[in-house]
Image (cartoon, rainbow, N blue to C red):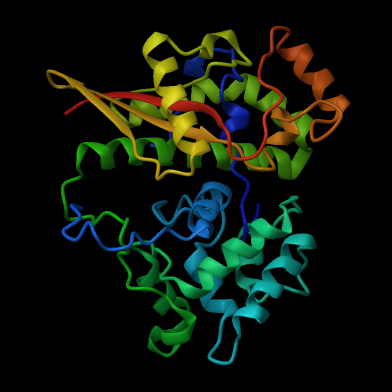
Length: 338
């Protein structure tokens, strides 16, 4: 498996599946002072969520994690005398060449395995590391109990290491009823995690070509199993399908265009939610990063010709190439009852 920065490979799954869906079972603020300057969100936050959270998502249960949460990475790599420069350098060096000798988390390697090498631009890692060092990182609801069990009282690791405050601004309290948007995001994120976990296992064991075969057979069944688990209807749709079954309908195409404009403009991305009676429709974009381009980039550049040949074998009508980084590959289209 992997830890530290994680690839966001759900785009590989979008429109990449054909076989029988039943074969795979589920794992069971208003602005009061408009004249004040607006503080822009650190770019490293979105990069971290986009590139790392398939494997390191803090909303994933402890049992379903396939890598340690990013808060654990921060706690192990930052001490009271660690400078930002040192931390950023350590993250860049790690991403370029993951190894057991470099790691400060031997327990994570023992549990999850060594993170496989993935290419990320150095600037991307720098931005993510800069954000992690300076910011409170969202903490899973189970993390404090887990940490105290493994390491004893964690109070000595607060402060400069920045464990954060546990719940985090974007985290949902287990005892609070979820809003409609939060329910939709939970469905998208847990499905993304389940898809990513299975796909990462294939890449780790057999490489990208084998992952294409896996995607072709199992992506839709996994998605359907998660829909059954959430008692909802979950799809990943696109305007440039790999599998024609994943073509977006007229309304979804409009939402894709909306998200494309928002992403291109660097705007904050929020879900689109519509309701009709008690039925809720939830839409949220699936965006690309550098790893996605191994299957969706420019042929002969990021997309190797051997991989392209396999894509053409599996999907003769494929339209899902030619993407760059941070582009909208498709959207989550999720329907459920209030």
